[in-house]
Length: 454
Image (cartoon, rainbow, N blue to C red):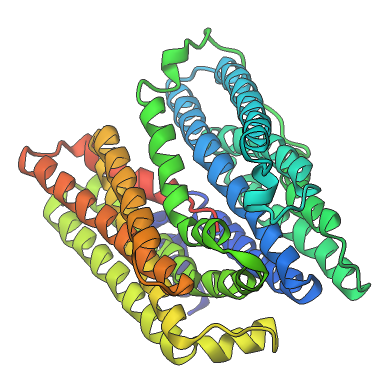
């Protein structure tokens, strides 16, 4: 009996792509610690300072994954392609490191220039708009851009070399390096905003060092890597990634920008914690990916394309189901869960949480369709759909209902819905022309390794 069980386990392990479990575990730890950090910061900081800290969170997670995640994906793809041909990927890493350094420097220069221009034009800089005037968070943003540049390059190098154990470790380690200091600060009663900003900004660098510990053979010599080896579509990937992250965090940006007066800025903190609570379906979405994608990959590998399309439809149905579950759960259980996690200061209502969950569900649907569209070389159309979603969000958020929360919530639902609809239309037009097997394989690979930054 034990030997029979072992054989079953061996077959199960062989059917799952290498690294699925370790990367999945890293994602789980990353997600849980992200929520833990939010809970501790909300309980420790005054509401205006908590809202300011999340201004840092949002800008960093729009700019860093927006620009560095496509670079990570292309580095991983290029190194893996070289490995399949028995060619060293060291030159690719060096070329990507140069690109990442230039990109990081450009982003830092852009942030500093935006601060100067905004302050010159209106006496209010970037810190006033997004950080509620807390200038101490500006250096934390610059540090975060540099540390995430290092981490995404490290992640691309590890995944391209098939080092999925360290890749999962880097995801988990970042969260642990963030939650432990935050817990110490909270236990000691420290409410220094700059320290919490550093706790957010520094962990990606420490996580990279941890993942690289005792790793060898990541920089094998090989032929010189031209810029074109990274990707001819890297520009569209940058655009799509940035606009996707912007739409993902549009409600928080909308609250921070549209809130007027001290009272509304204090309410912004309540909205932000509700927004993160409503994003729990994203964690469920990542779990579904980990469970279904290996099966889809196996169907393609065995040539069962009809079964693959049926499995893809099942994935989309489950995505919609997760969205509906999030809306119902947000309305019925959301306020109670918010009070349990965030304490008596939590005050967001059932309607607000349900609308935010609806926007998150539609965003997940748009993300899944976007990954399929990119897999069939629809990079430009995917980017256009994300732009349309952002335009729809701001149009509704600015001109809709008078109530601040409702404006932003309706804008999120409209923006994510428009993006999902546009992706579906573009993908349908592409499917009618026929999709080669290589594109189907690319699709599975795309959604298997696309990580949404919580």
